[in-house]
Length: 138
Image (cartoon, rainbow, N blue to C red; front, side, top):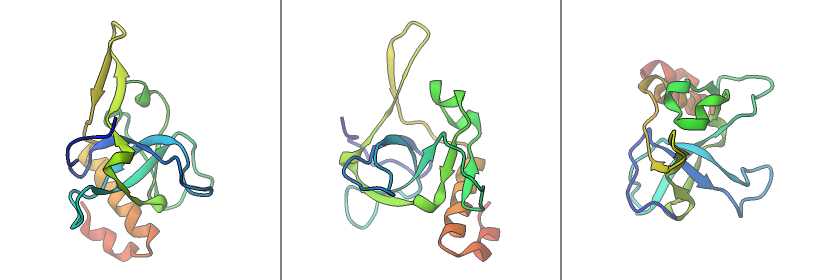
């Protein structure tokens, strides 16, 4: 079910990329919101996450700290693919679903750590050829 709120920058969600075409992302995957509200309602800019390590690793890749990832997402090394930034509609986004110790489903929209968010922003700047500006992102 799509989100019904405007996510803040740094929020971790799931995005359904179905309908995109390779080499774009084409399945559901975790994403980090890098913008809040756009001038146009219901659009959000995101960076997708992947458990597939990039080869080779570039400045536009960032390995996430497991503290930024809830539940089973924290069990595998996870990479922010900052060169694949996208602007998507709210209808593609949903909260993260995890299970608690008793097996009950929990829906959440946690925030990533400040360090991970800053690294993602630096990665996006590198991806769009603005690496010189990364000194301003803390």
